[in-house]
Structures are given as structure tokens and as C-alpha cells.
Length: 302
Ligand code: CDT
Image 1 (tube, rainbow, N blue to C red):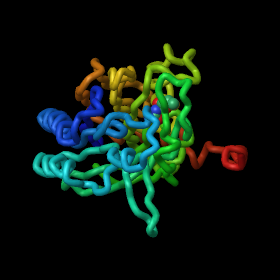
Image 2 (spheres, rainbow, N blue to C red):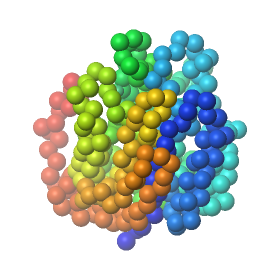
Image 3 (cartoon, helix red, strand yellow):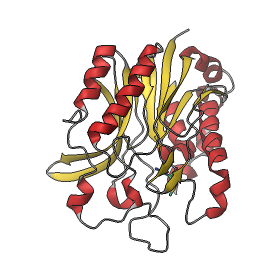
């Protein structure tokens, strides 16, 4: 067996007024709990340093940019890296990234994987940005990810924690291609943070199914690719809007082996044997033997 002891680092709501320092203190408290329980890795949600700001329309770029990190680690996040190094625990953290590429400012919805030496070993930029780009006043709240971020370009994997680790962010988890592109690279554990409002203004008839859909997509992604999936929420009522929690750890069988019980700051743990992926990858989902890519062309042609 190749065990990775993983902690979900679920967060409850982050108020708009909450400082980065206060949030990092919450993340650090969860990290200490994970370490006290023998964990190698703690996974935090999407945009884990601030409130979920795409719910508001903002026209002033300077105001928008207050939610972004220009450095990682930066002044406020340095303490989390220092604690990880002291405790020798890895982490996965979602944040809004502002970077300059060839003189052009780029903004991404990003997650990083940090090893036990507090080194960033991989970075992922969200590919599937949901919502809309313009103000839609009829909505009770906005979902302006298409306005505030550019899409990332690929789903990579990294050799880390003794296995092949990938990342995805929130809406990515609903798309089978997310898992399959990493499955084709031999992924053994996919780390997914999310912020999911219970209410989806364009389709309120889905609201009662939001926790079902959360499990449905992550459990099928795990099974169909023979991989562990770690799903981590920022849940609860944030700035008046209810978000699902439902954080869970899913085995390559598709079974949930650990789950949070609240909608607040909480860890949940599992001892994940990466070798449990093998029987799925070598039998029913042996891609080399059984896939029929010549029949799948339409997926990328349109
Ligand atoms: N953060 C994020 O991607 N949330 C979306 C909300 C639904 S689409 C407006 C999700 O897929 O959970």
C-alpha cells in the first residue's frame, strides 16, 4: 500500500470584512488539527482567502484587484507556509491570482499544491469558469467568474506525496473531461475545492438537488478514472447567500469514505491507499485496452 493521510480543510463562510490575517488564522487552526491527526496533506476550498467575490458586480478594477494575490506566498500567507514547513504537512490552497505575463496583467482562479517543505510543486488555473460576464440585475446575486477571470489552459498532474496528484476547481468537477484528461496522465488523487450556492438563479429547479449533484459528479469521476477524489467546500451562509457544504473523500471505487458533518470550519480525514487505484486502472478502466478514442472525435471537434 501507498498511504496518503488526507484532511479535508472545510471552511465556513468568510465575511467580506474579514481580513486575510484572520482567514489565515482559521486555515492554520485546521492545519494544526490535521497534523495532530497524522495527516500528510490538507486540502482547502476554492478562493479560500476571501469571501466569494464574484457574487457582486464591480466596475472598478482597483476594487476587484483587492481580492487578488500578487505573490504566493505573500505577506499574509507567509504564516501558513511557515506553519506547514514546521509541521511538515502539505496543503492545497485556492486563491485569486494576479500575474503579469509578457507585460500583460492576467487574472486566474488558481489552486496550488505545496509539499512538506513548503515548496509549491504544482499550480492549476480553473478551466471551466461558470456564470456570466455582464451585470444581470434580475439575479438575486451575480456569478461573475467570466468577468473577473481568464480560463486556464490545461489539466496537469504532479508527482507528489508518493503518487500522481491533480487539481480541479469547483465547476470543473461537473465535467467528465476534467477527470479523464488527468486520468489519461495516470492521476491517483484529484483535489477539488468549491463554492457552490444552493440557489442557481437561471435554474432554481436544480436547487433541491445541489448536494446530490455534488456527490454524483465527484463519485462518477473517481470511479470512471480509478482515482481518489477529495472534494472540499466553503459552505454555509456567506454574505446572506447559502452555500452547500458536503465535503467528502471518495475512493477509486466511487464510495465516500469520509465526510464533513457541519457547514463550518471542520476537518474530515481518510487514510487513502493510492494502490487502491490499480485494480480499476488495470481492469474495467484499462484505457489502453478498452478505450475507443476513434469514436470520441466529436468531443474535441465541436
Ligand atoms: N464556484 C463555482 O464554480 N460555482 C459553480 C456554481 C454554479 S454555476 C453558477 C458550481 O459549479 O458549483
